[in-house]
Image 1 (cartoon, rainbow, N blue to C red):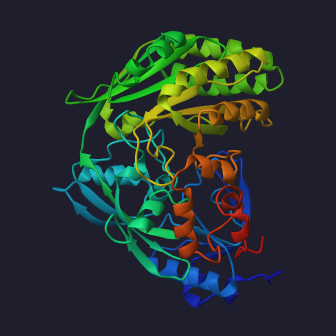
Image 2 (image 1 turned 90 degrees about the vertical axis):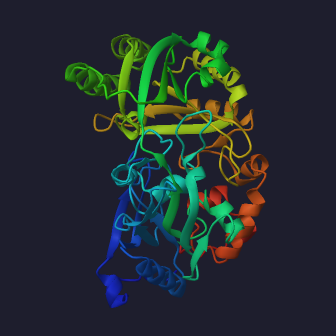
Image 3 (image 1 turned 90 degrees about the horizontal axis):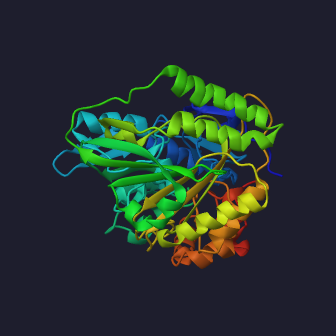
Length: 467
């Protein structure tokens, strides 16, 4: 066992940004860790110093931003590095529609900076709390049949490798590193800056309408291509769903008329209280779902606003979540099988099952690598702060088994049960990624439990960490 390293043993210029025995919890409070040393650097030079210190003392290093990943991908008991203070704008090219920022900048701040320069990201996921490094390291996504995951927007990036080397990569400079790092899982080094391709700022018009889910499944390809951005929410225990469609528009902004008592009072507080009760009486869950659909979701919704405000929505409260990507032509059959399993096994599960569509790409570890993809996400709310966690493992196992049968690829940011061997089988460039990772981090400085389970081959698990 390596002896504990205290803050007072650090170089003077690192002591001011260090903390001992820092406790980290992710947003959903499903994973936590206590790190020997926590660092909050504000410069690339400090990142280099931290990596060199880790190399000297044989410590593992993991980086985190907002902590939104519902997995232990960012956890470590050695050196934990938060990059929130690395949030500066480095360059903006309005004519080329590009921006270079430090990797710790949150998406919320990036939207403001882009809009000040007449720009916007072409697509977004459900939230913008994450750092830009976090969303690209896991190939996070939004929805849109002709839009790739967020990692497809990367033009170049800079990272600090396990030796403390500052390495620039792009499609023409260190192209293999670039192909691996666009979805690098924090396994290649610490990203310090990123250049992104944007587009001229735009508004979206979004219309959400209720449908019967069997009708949507019967017209699947038509629904996928019925707007630039399409999202489907299915309500288990019913044949109800909603389809959200959004397109670019020149129309003036139009707010969705709503009542606080309906949107927040019922949609958040009453719903959370009802779910807490259902923890002890799960048979009421189908009734809760039907009430919530009929009250909140059976009506048409119409809004026109700045793109990021339309893409994003409130994810409510902490939750267990699982999301996999399968070929979008297989999704209707997969959904029918999931519905049948829920009914045949008398499971009581929460809504929604969220369905989104993403274009194919050429990023080595992107779940959308070389195939047009449907993401299917399932959730079980944890009812924090009302009560204890809900049972979900039987639901999760059945869901994952169904996804595997279609060559499913799990979302990297979310906890999943896929083995390294199974992942290797569905990612044609998996071993190319491993080759680059082994070259950049031969002593496994950036490896943690998550990467040991899912990425690093057993013969290479001579980890740097004390764990």
